[in-house]
Length: 154
Image (cartoon, rainbow, N blue to C red; front, side, top):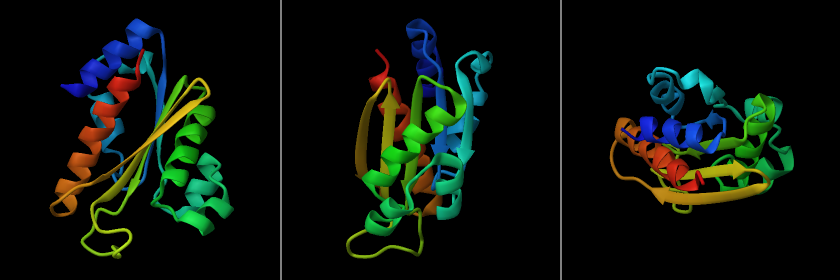
């Protein structure tokens, strides 16, 4: 299970993690906290679903939201940095996207997800488009976020 691998990797590297979720609604945090002993490495998480919560809880710039929108690489990067700072974690992981069934546009279709990881001054962002209904998009985004996180642990 990826959540076990992530936490084992964090333990070996001596790192801690915090999670900011939008479209996944807390699923990543849920999977991490299902692992016994996760509190040693998992500092906490935020489900920042509204733009206002992204700004107030994670420090996302209103100008970023205006220029790029909540479903953007730029927003995901700021969310990841903000959640790491908010929880004093070594790594921050953020997910934002459009789970559907509505809300998509030709430029930003249903299933579009951005995942960002911030660690020790470095930030990386990833874009994916997942097929399926709302439940499937959320499940795939959660799995991909954990997979990418594992790859970012030294």
